[in-house]
Length: 127
Image (tube, rainbow, N blue to C red; front, side, top):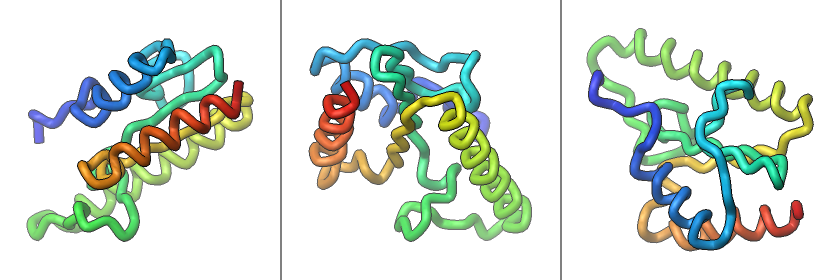
């Protein structure tokens, strides 16, 4: 588990490359904002979180498999991550930010293009 990255993950880099190629400029992991969002688009007053399905307890996702060992620890860990995510999103909404959450499974080959186009479309509507 020590090799699991918290930033610069493959899904995150994929989203960043797409945004940059489409003319969107952003900042990374702004520590001043609640939850330290992965991508911050100040011009659009929008933040993007790129979540791993396992770590953030993505519901009804085939990539979320609870470990057989220390299962109680993992249930508590993931449920606390979910609570923290909800709290951070609420705080960002109170501050007037738009929030986009992309889960890792939405960036798999079969869904990647649709997901990224939806993000692009959402950002264009905001402007």
